Amino acid sequence: MSYHPSRVIALVRVVGPLLLGLIGVAAPAAAQSPFDSLQWRSIGPVNTSGRIDDIAVARVKGMADAIYVATASGGLWKSANNGTSWTPVFDDVDAMMSIGAVAVAPSAPGTVWVGTGEANTRQSSSWGDGVYKSTDGGETWTDMGLKDTRAVGRIVVDPTNPNVVYVAAQGHLWGPNTERGIFKTTDAGRSWTKVLFVDENTGANDLVVDPTNPAVLYASTYQRQRRTWGFNGGGPGSGIYKTTDAGGTWTKLASGLPAGDKGRIALDIYTADPRVVYATVQAHGEDQGIYRTLDAGASWEKVSSLNTRPNYFSRIRIDPQDRDNVYTLGSNRGFYISKDGATSFTELFSSVHGEDHALWLDPDQPNHMIIGGDGGVSISWDRGQTWDFRRNMPIGQFYEVGVDNSVPFRICGGLQDNGVWCMPSAVRNENGIADRDAWSIGGGDGFHSIFDPTDSSMVLQSSQNGNAAWVDIETLERRGARPGTGDRPAAQSEAAERGDEGARGSYR
Image (tube, rainbow, N blue to C red; front, side, top):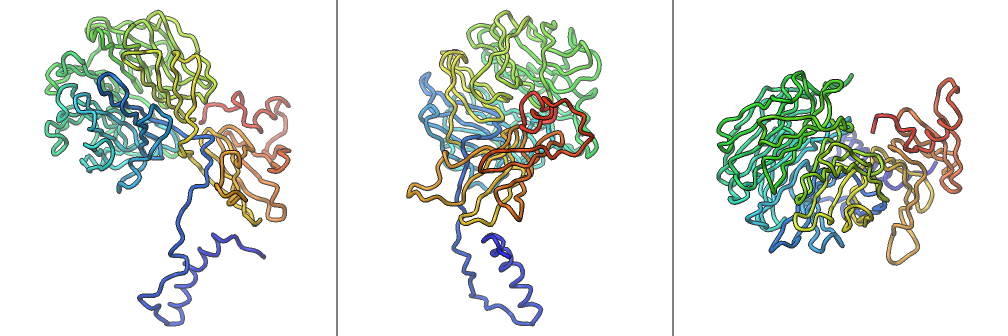
């Protein structure tokens, strides 16, 4: 029987000390394991990238000086050359690597804030441990507290004063807690005041500020809690609030909005005329959709019923130069654009991965946009007609990996919404493992990949909705292995086994 090197390491480290303890022999204090000098190395793949939660851009003299990308489980990444290359700037921080929000101080572009913990409510959401600040463009970071907020949906920095910061915290996903709501600091994070709190089951999801009057802010609250048997994504705690005194007091807005229980709510403000605010509102039946106010929240009108899977997406953005151009995220194949004030939408198909969570629009050139979703970051200069996918961010979210006993050994693993990929552990090339060395053996949400112990060319792979298939990873031949009655239509069965988009269902 042969053993993979990683298994040998595990046996030495676990069984060795155990045997020494059993025979009463103490290991020398200065003794070192021959494996202590081993170092982790990245073998990829970067072909797939991974889920993006937020995007912020530092602007100097009207130009994009730095782009910051917050990832669901891969830390914070920075580009100083318009996305040509990326550098991880949060890896050395003793913090959680799930980033829910990132913000740059408009009046101090070197000051960057991140809120850890993903605010998108799914079964695999990662939690965080508070907020962090950098004053040197991400070179160094300081822990600024709010440790028990767990998930941060938005950070807003006062446009004129970098010491004034607001944090929209959702709190624990799997239970109640009180460190949630809207927090404010006036001393650059040395102390915080909770300025908006509903209850221990309701946190704050989104937050926007009037750029002409920083004392005016709109916030959305979100009542939600996940259990092992299901998810409660709404309640009386959800709503839209407004303050005109920088968070001193808040008014819950109601005129024209759904009166019953609501779920997740996204907000955006039209910077050229801050009286215009759009909101996507999760509600029951026909009440769900997109709402707009033209009078700074005094009254609202429903303009569309579109609101795609709000607990996971719920993002709306307004063209900074045209209030009738509105974007909402969440399409499987792109996102939605309206040119008539959100009255009607067209699905904007893209050549890159859909299911987007973040969209940045250049305030001076709205045709320039950066989008982030389950498949990474893409940049467009023509309002989404063509895209440049940034294939250089190793942030894939593996659920599970398996290895075989070949030499060099091979690794196959399933990724969130990016299928199942295989990689060699080594190649005969002085430049090392490249993108071309990785190959896909399945689509959809990849989960387990188990090598046949008697034939390492065969992998049993699973994906969402209970799909399973045997795949020959060398020829890519496959046969379904999902248990069941066998009465599914052939086309649906084949699509499900491939992991095709149309067979996915609602779980992603």
